[in-house]
Image (cartoon, rainbow, N blue to C red; front, side, top):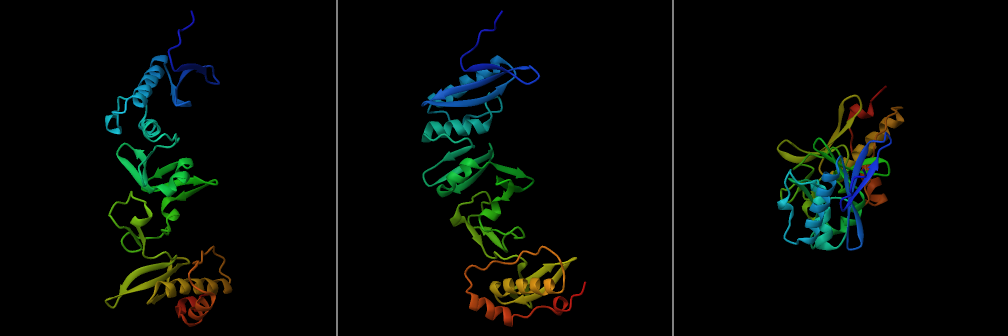
Length: 265
């Protein structure tokens, strides 16, 4: 006897012929997949829940529980479509000048509305305490998208102005030190920029009054080591706001450590 199909439920089979059920719903002429389920009843419950979310404006994300038939990400997607009229496949909820990206029910990121197109098509992943997006086959850290170097130390090299490290709006991110190999530190009771280059351990290149001098000193150390035959993939600092003449003047006068000048393989 053929099993009676419930609304919003479509039976299907895996490659090994195992039967499963897909649930979907159409809202505002948009066909929305709700996921796959092991039983017809579970798939139908997901359909009923989705219909309730889309048709009941009083339902909010606060109503989600672990007993819900749909996962939390799908709740975000459906409620955003209901409230804002834009279907986005990632767990994004749009506000007037910014939007939330929900990693989970208890963890949400905040972004400027200008970033909506990017995150609509790029899923954010979390590994340990680090956040990434997959872009052109590579994993790109969220920090790097906002000019925060991979070596950066919070409250020294960068900070979130409102103290919320989940708020990636541009006005909230302050990068105090964007340069590779440069650290903000103190020497003889005064703040300075320490340049360090890693060879077989950290080598101090020097201490400098400005971040620009420290960054150029790092580049100069790279050039010196390359001339001595050290084959290592150092990443030089790119200084877009420094003119060629200014760069050349600082490069010629900046002093680097004798350990670098006299380095031998």
